[in-house]
Length: 384
Image 1 (spheres, rainbow, N blue to C red):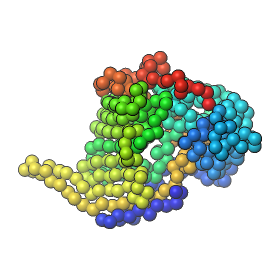
Image 2 (tube, one colour; image 1 turned 90 degrees about the horizontal axis):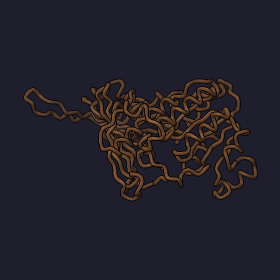
Image 3 (cartoon, rainbow, N blue to C red; image 1 turned 180 degrees about the vertical axis):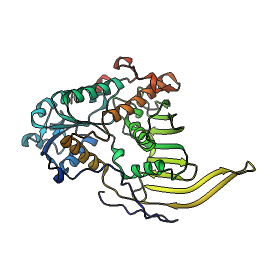
Image 4 (tube, helix red, strand yellow; image 1 turned 30 degrees about the vertical axis):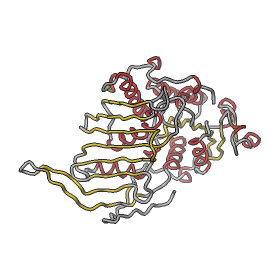
């Protein structure tokens, strides 16, 4: 992690270096920013990663952990005695300039608003909110307070995803037919949202980024195999009508394999992004099907190439970008509007699941938090 990954292929090798489209995180010594103090709110599985990365980010002078469970967490209790940990956001606010919120999704809006109204910059892990109305409230609050609001769509800081975007946008694959993605694993079951809210934000943000567009419609179907409240397996079909492309997303907490796969199929070539293959994250297949003059099908089988993808840990790239935006006032690549676009898709998917039909994105634009499309158990609303 953090070094270039030299990809190879048994068929052939493309020595083009890709992934260079990732927005450069300006070196902090060039802009000479103030040294920022950052609090990581929620130090569970993902929050602990944020804690590590933020401590290694140039321009950050201090990182503190914030979690009500801190006294009970292995290896964390000592932070309270050293002043590097707090058991509530209120206690931490006077000691920080920015907050990374890595708590359950149902808490994102109230905690984000509390931090923003205290004048703190905020990075909120995906999804930005559980409703479009909540996301819009965060966006307006950040605008009023004049602070940075950013959402943790980490894959938009991934060099392989940028290469896939370049392959699509440059039309190297020809006319794009569709995108297909799978994000599967055994767990981790969440207590406040279904698998769509937990896993699909990654693939929706990847699809929006790669296609350079946002969906106009969503059809979703799923099942509740283990949890009686929340779907643990789901499929989404996103229609990007303005460009004539569909994206298919399969997410599951109930699969024996860990799969992180995106396939882009075009009229000339096909590309596969496999995040589990550290040696060959991108493979370009020179394969296509065309209809011949006699109405038969012609199958083209060419070489498979695996270009080199310059790799830097996406979470670290995201952290540097967050610092840059805070110090320069630039708009983040994954700003509040970016987060809202994903939440609107998820909200439409929730409506589709409930009503078993295709939902237009325009249908959810006026929904409020009182619609109840996303059931939130009381057990998940405890303060962090």
